[in-house]
Image (cartoon, rainbow, N blue to C red; front, top):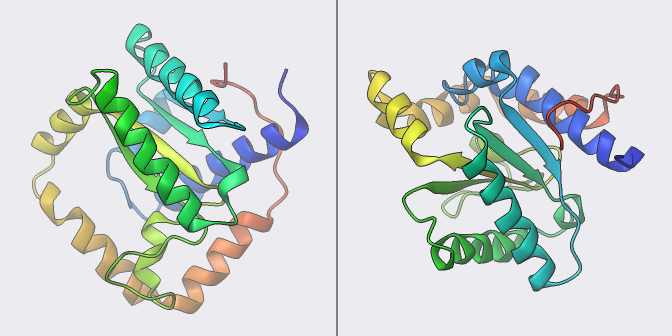
Length: 194
């Protein structure tokens, strides 16, 4: 049974995907998985590197065993307040993937409430392409991603198009929309969480 804080984290993350990522077409491949309900939203709390290692490995093995499940968003609310700690955890997750032999099978995309690209500053609206209500590690199947990229006419343009789109929408609009996403009361929806 999920705690109320876990249910809220799932609801906010799902709401972000369905009302921000999909409508703005930040990820052109997300709509299909939302419609198929093949995204797993999994909160993860950990108190040590070993606990994180075990939990991430369990999630990778779950993806490996369940072909109906396309992808997992690991939600890490305990890292919401520290972008640096989140980046360290994301780097550790990449090491785990390599150590466990999943390189070439899975990759990770990163999202955080305070995400800032390395060549950017806090006031760049483009940062919102990777901002989410909670810190998240998005576990992606590389084979599925490669198929989607081949089917998309200009996949290499997606990041540049997103940056251009969000900058055109402007920082004020992105801040308002993001605040609304984070502040919206959410219903408890627990499908695809276990």
